[in-house]
Image (tube, rainbow, N blue to C red):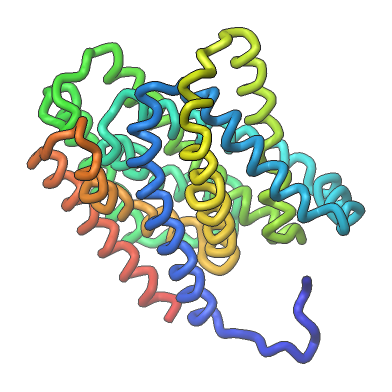
Length: 315
């Protein structure tokens, strides 16, 4: 609902701070979800898990549009190009996220994914949002994060991560999907903001962004026919992931993107690896890795500095 003419207008600084709060909630919830999924996907095919989770989520969000169907359809029609591109980025982002967790330690997977997001977000923002400002502090922070990610990739191939020695093939697949996912997340951030600027509400954007993902996952499941028993035996566990690990985090992330810019989102999201590192201690299949801790701690330093610099500019 659009605010009434009498509704108070909040300042840009206050809106940005509120956006950072929403994004922080998103980071905490998704960090817990990454550890949880990393354990589940050792037995459940990632594409089957994607189909189960996002079918439920897409239904839930589209139900919110039942009383607003004309406006929802008009929003998609008026922004069709951006809706299609957002669907493509969403597909790549989530397949990358789920597939990476099957092969790599959650903290490493998260670090590689978010490590390249700030830089790719800067590039995508400049390509598709000509009004997006580019500051030196953003670039320095993003490059520092990328270098830290390179170090963590070396840790994976050297067998020094919490998952121990990983086969070269698994490591390559995990890293490639992580990079693809990172680039796609940058696109999701930019095009979600573009759709909001184009007049679509948070619920409308969330409702229309998963159609391609569901179609691709369904085709995969029908063709490959992965085992269903591991998913069925953990049905209640998977059911908890949908509201707490997907719907709520994605909703608050969308709200955060409406109030803060994509670069701020990506920089704050890069705090996730250090949070994941401590949460993954609950997974008994993983051991403590000082190399992973050092890399994720360095990531946190670069992210914190970049976020503080951006906050000072909009305060």
